[in-house]
Image (cartoon, rainbow, N blue to C red):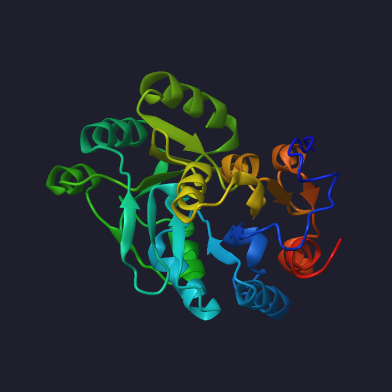
Length: 285
C-alpha cells in the first residue's frame, strides 16, 4: 500500500468528518454475485448521504445499466460511466459531459479488430452493438438488462456522427499481450486502454479514466483530494484510487489495486463497501 502523504491523515486515522465525497465501483465492489446492492451497503450509503457526504457511482458500465443502481440508492448525483467517458445525473439522466473516441479512430480500431477476429462490442450512449452474437453478449444482457444489438460495424460507424463512448474486446489469453501491444503502438496517441476483467480490454478516448472524471467532479464541488474516498477492485479503478486522498481496495481486488491502495477492506461478498464507509465516515477509527 502507498504511504499517505497528506498532513491531515496520520496512518489510517481519518477524521469521520473529513471525507466529503465517496466514489464507488459497481461490479465486484458494491454489487453481490447476483448484481444486487446488499442491504448493509445500501444502509451505509444512506447514512453517509444523510451526513451530507456526496456518494457517486463510478463504473465501466454503460449509463443505461448503471442508472438502476443510482435510482435504487436515491443518488441524484452524477454517475461516472464508461470509465469516465460519460458522466450523467443518476436519476434524471442529464449528461454532464461526454468524451468520445472520434469516428476516424474508431473505424481504424474496429477494422483492425475485425481483421484479427477479436470479438468486441461498441457503445453509443444507451446502445451497444456487436458484429455477431456471442455467449458474452448473452451474459452481458443478463447482467445489465441491456440488449446487445447485432449490426455491420463499419456501416454503423459510417452513419455515426458523434463518436463511440467505448469499445470492449474479449481477448484469448494466448493472444492478449500481442493485441494490446499492437493497439498501443498504432493507436496509443489517441486512446486509453484499461480492463475490468482478466480477459477484457476496454478502449476509451485518450485522457479518459475514472480518476480524471472524479477529480473534475470534486473540483466542481470544491473538494480537495484528501476529502475524497474511492473504493474499487479492478485495473480500471487505478486512476481514481490513486487520485483519492483515501484509496480503498476490496480484498478481492487485482494485486495492482491492492498495491496502490491506502486501505484494504473485506471482499464484495462480505460487504466491504459498508465496512469501509463505517470505518472512515460513520464512526471514529
